[in-house]
Length: 73
Image 1 (cartoon, rainbow, N blue to C red):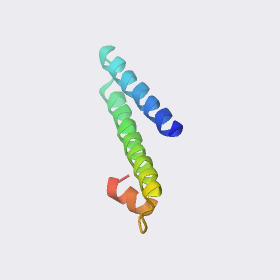
Image 2 (cartoon, helix red, strand yellow):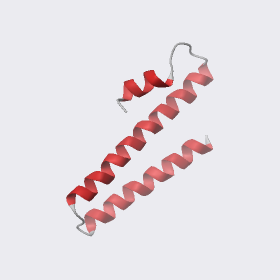
Image 3 (cartoon, rainbow, N blue to C red):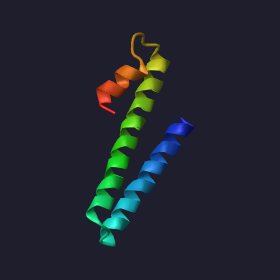
């Protein structure tokens, strides 16, 4: 749980940084690069959450490769 909360806090920081970049009229490609990083981080967060849920509910037959394919990361 703590790991997930920390991950969300990092994403929140990344999004705030993107907002500041836009406010400060930073280069478009730099902003897009940061947006890509946030998207990747959100995908990893989704996998973490699903893995925790699967482990808690003891589902069989779902592995990390399947989850990465599901989220295309």
